[in-house]
Length: 384
Image 1 (cartoon, rainbow, N blue to C red):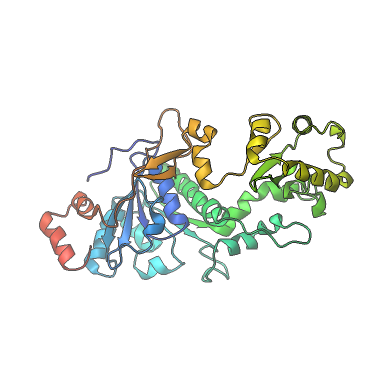
Image 2: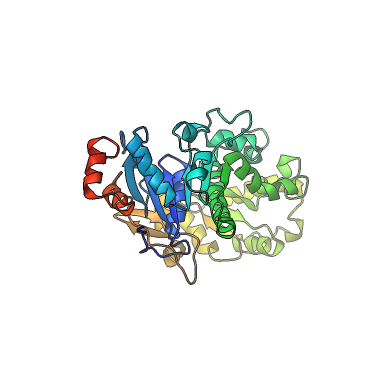
């Protein structure tokens, strides 16, 4: 049976079937495809473009087929794909795949070595499993959202990177690779239940351990990592742009004071909380006297632990990001490069996302369908 063997990367030779959706599942598929896996997206034949615009970046390096899973011939084509695959990933509400006849038990009977990856907000079990929700809800339930709350203020709403992408997509990809490694030894697949609440809870392990310490005291006005300290916060500049200071360790704090000309501030008093409000106001006033470019020239690249707050477009052209090739141009659109980096088996150069169903005939032929059979599937509405 044919395989896409032209890819580079450490996951070359693996085939992953992704059921088209939104949010964390497509990003997990992108991470796997970037690393060389042959990721095949099954789109809905009835509406193959549904949600595709949101996946322009995350569908890169994938192949696409549009199938009608409610048509017996379309379902059989999906099964042939799954029988040829090492793993599948899906991000539907619990029970959807089972109702389609494609649940884990059915998959294990057709392909015992198949790893079955599932990502949801609440998980496959528990009293909230069937409830609707979004990133903000999942982060809130783990206690992680409360970590952003300063005294007298509501929690800061994080970008959807925390729950959907950090707690969901990353843990789905990690869990899938773990299960694939085990399947190579045992010859048996298993279900990977990647819940965003589980993932975000795992990400908060270090902070939970730090509760009550000098880094994360119960009194939030003394919490360094919440921006209470003058040496760990974002500051507005004269031009309305922002910079960040994060001089946590004493040598770095001393370097920051020296470069800012605050020679009358004793570095040894860094953690005297009573001095923080006045010093913070002083630093804030100082930062507002000059534009961001001035502070970049003075502080960037030093041990003062400084970085400007860049917007997405500015980040694309920052000299450090440019030197490392953090962003690449994909068919006229700037996208992040594959990460992480490998010395011997680098990931793929990102290729444009396929049109929904673009590789349908190619994939069907790989699965053993002849030209007449492909035409018959399309005529019957089993595939687009």
